Image (cartoon, rainbow, N blue to C red; front, side, top):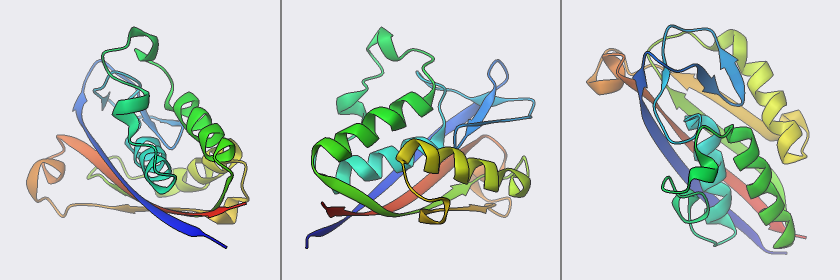
Length: 159
């Protein structure tokens, strides 16, 4: 049995002209995250961790921000594509652990929907996906409300 671990990170700044998406869920807020796609930092960190776990590079390699095909694309589509890559390589997703770092909005009520949305895309049980939210306690660019970041660790097993 071969088990591998991947780690992912993503961050984006807030802008006023976008909707906020986290974990594939639209979150009511007065700003969204700037990016070539919908800038869902949570999905991006998980997708990047999965790509790392199976040893095929990162999001920039597979979904470059210079490609118009990915302009404003839903990150749910990115996660679907990455999930297929994981399956084609013969891996099974065992566990996803993730953390969003954001000052506002408060996300606790959205965690169950984020978790189930991503579990459905990944083709795993909801209990396989863990989402945590932390503030930056007013420190740094996140603490000033300038944006958000997310970290993810994934465990996969060769099928």
